[in-house]
Each structure stands twice: as C-alpha cells, then as structure tokens.
Amino acid sequence: MDMAQALALASGALVATNLASILVAGKRLKPAGAPPPDIRKKPPVSVVVPVRGIENFSAETLERAFRLTWPSYELLFCVAHGSDPIVAEIERTAAAHPDVEARILIGDDRVSANPKLNNCVKGWQAARHDWVILADSNVLMPPDYIQHLMAGWRRNSGVVCSTPLGSRPEGFWAEVECMFLNTQQARWQYAGEALGLGFAQGKSMLWYKPMLDANGGIQALNAEIAEDAASTKLVNRLGLQVHLVSSPFEQPLGRRSGQEIWSRQCRWSRLRRVTFPGFFAPEILLGVLPPLALALAAALFSGAALLPATLLVLAAIYLPEAALALAKGWRLSLLSLPAMIVRDLLMPAIWLRAWLSGTIDWRGNTMTIGTSTCELKEAPAGS
Image (tube, rainbow, N blue to C red; front, side, top):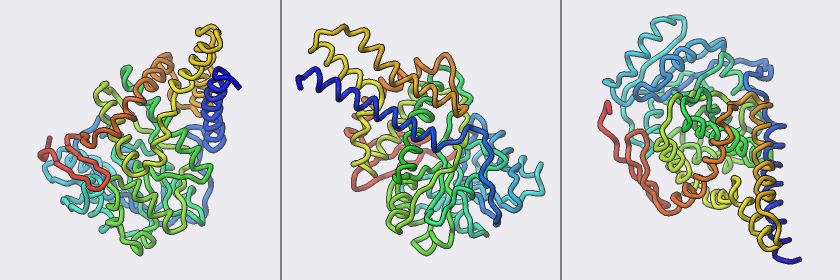
C-alpha cells in the first residue's frame, strides 16, 4: 500500500465513523416533540431550578415550568442573592399559578468551585420528594417534561439526562451554536449512550434522591469541577449507567455573539479535557477538517484533482448531518451549512486551547480549571 492509499483509507475511516455516529444516534433518537413512552407509576417529583439574572427567554421558561402535566410536583427556585432581579419575575409567575407548589430559596452554599452546584445545594436539601430533577433555568420544558425523564429510567439507571437542543437562533453566531449543540454534541452523546458510554449532562438531570443521599448526597457532585462529570463517575462507580431521554429538550438561544460562542465552547471543552482526558483527546479528529486534510494529501500524492476530493468529503460529512437534523425536526436553515463549516473551523482551536489554558469565564465568574485544583472568583452580586 502506497502513501496515497493509506491517506485515502484514513480519510474514509473518519468519514465512516462520522456516518456511523449519525446512524446510531438517528436510531436512538425520536423526533422533536414526539410523545414520551407511557409509564404507569407517577410519583411526586421535586424540580430544583438554579437561577441567576434575567435571560433572553426567562419569562417563557418560567411559565413553562408552571405548566407541566405531571400529577404532583414542586418547583424549588434557587437564588444566591435576594437582590437578583429574577426573584421578582419568579414571584409574578408563581402568583399567576397558585395551584403549583413553588418556593424561592435564597442563600450561597459554598461546597465547590462550581457556582451552579453551590446554588443547587439548598434546593436538594429542601426537596420533599424521592425523585428530584436538577433543571437549568434556560431549558424550555415541554408539558410532558417530567414524563420524558421518568420514562427514561431503567433498572440499571443511576441518572437520566437530556442534552440541550438549540432552537430559535437570532443571527449567524446563534446558528453556529445550534450546530455545536444539535448535530454535533447531542448526536455524539446519544451515539455514545447507545453504545453503553453514557455521559451525564447538567441541563436536566433526574435523580433518585435516596440513592444519591446514600452515596454522599449532592455534595458528592463536587468531586469534579463539573457536576455532570462527577455524576457520570459516581454512577459508573456504583455499577449503574447514565441514560438519556428519548428526545432532547429545547434551549432557545436568541442572539449570540462570536465571543459568547467561543467562551462557552472553550469552557465546555476545558471541562471535558480535565474530567475525561482520555475521551477528550480524540475530539481533534471530529469535524470535516481531519478527513478533508487526509483526502487532499492523498490527492496530492496520487496526482488527482483537489476539487473533486474536497467536494466528496464535504458532501460525505455534511449531507448526513443535515439529513439527521431534518429527520428529527431540529434547526435547519439556509445558514446551517455555513454554520457547520465555521463550527468545524473553530473546533481545532477550541481543542488546543483546552490543553493550554485553564482560565475561563462563566457568566461573569472567572474560573480557573486545573487538572488538580479549581478556583472560582465570583462576579459581584447583580452583575
């Protein structure tokens, strides 16, 4: 085998792996808006929502939380500071839904360098029910939100989660964020879970409270800087698995800037690099650039034309990805292909930064994420 053939085979292997992940995820996933599986038992559930500040869709996401169709549930909104403007918004929404049990819990419990986990502690402790959902404030909960999560629980489940599904983008950079969240990250996460390599996602996490309390409680999730990474490792250590809902929940994006996308993706990338370095390292092979570079090198060695090789790789990578989005009812627009390309151009730089730098921004907080220690410098209250 000569060099051109070896390079072509390597490129083909990456393209085939990409296609396989799409096929596996496509089989595992139901289309957006599909009803959850039927379940007979519907125990009461506590929904813990850490909140901070007013976000693009706060009014709508709050309203959705009060309109869930589950027979019995309580909402526990966790706020670090009573002066936070979101408190008044929660109070207005709760007053419009007096039939739903809701409480606002204020306080700052420092159990880790993770501000979200710190904010959740009081909600976990105040939860009155055995089943507890930790739900990010920007999740757009469908009416059957709880049923989706409960239906995902199996005999060997340790936690049930959902990835965020980007929707309602405004502007090009929000389209790029959709392509990061949906056909890239959600696709690979569902493909991994289908193969027995489930990883927790902190956007929506269903726990059986007695089980977690017997293994250190919510404080046990401070073993890693990211509570979802700590959740994955704890569940695996107990011989259980992470499972995902049949169809992920929306996160409406609104407008995003390029800097916001860069900062957010660098933060997630750094967290993956610190918590699961063995799984993070091969991420450099994802996207269109590695198979495209190998295919162009093969063409150069063999004397073949470069343009057909380029078009062939682009079609082999992006057409199946677009087909997955179309089949599942995910965001797909005229800007999706350019957004995919920009995403793939950014990925190597984001991957490299994750190895070189540990200082990132999290909603105004400066977080230093090292391989042995992590530190948090919080922004002033109300900022």
